[in-house]
Length: 335
Image (cartoon, rainbow, N blue to C red; front, side, top):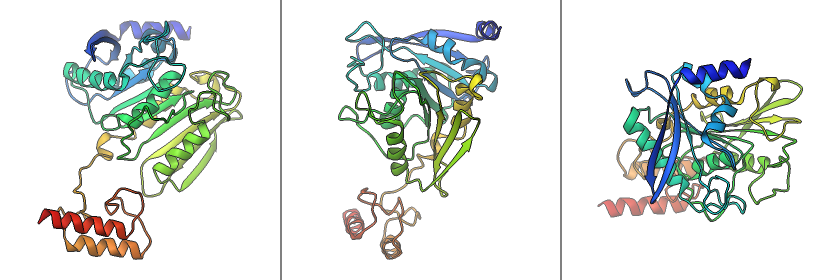
């Protein structure tokens, strides 16, 4: 009965296939959207990516995201991975098994632009998630398309960090990750079967990158623990749903939560503008000028052995005399 009601819901919703050309390839995506989409630019967009061998229609049905998104005025787009060097559609995330050399990051970027052109979405609230290989792709976008996407979610997909990526690493990255401990496809515990970071390694990587210094754990039920990694001076979190006995699955209400509902709740905490506020390099005191006052404040930060993102002039994640030298050079070059 639940599936029948869901089919009825998606039948009466507004849906449409689109094709675009990117990098001399015809790429496709399927979008579900609330009726009012296009009447204003207040509609968020969630990119929901299928797994290896999947397709947009199967991911739409499998994730049941439409029933949680549309009634909140959220559009969901289901892009289609391609079968580049195999017969199975996939996303190019740099693994040995995806057999895909296409520019999928560029495709997603172009797709966002085209959807905004057609529907006038809220570019401040664009999010990305995916299942399995699609979860790997969500991590890939966190690495390479963080200038367009506010927050990211992975369901049973790990973070492949290798030479194929050009990681921007210019802002804090909110991530939510769902994984079952009995996943027989993308294993939860080490060792990694494909060289990707395991769940614990991903948590450590992004916790260090985001400079988290706090963590908490909530026991949702006997099978599910929710871990949160954060710092007191930031809105950014890494949230991990650890599902004991869970397999390679998009977890639904029989586990005490629905993955799509939790993804949406997490995503709506963030806007791209939370992270991309422009600042002047060297403007340590943020008074819209770079001068001796910034040198004085930077010296004080060093003496206090503290950290300031604005004071990390050479972007080595350490505040030191090298930053003062770099700041002096900036001032001299400007005069």
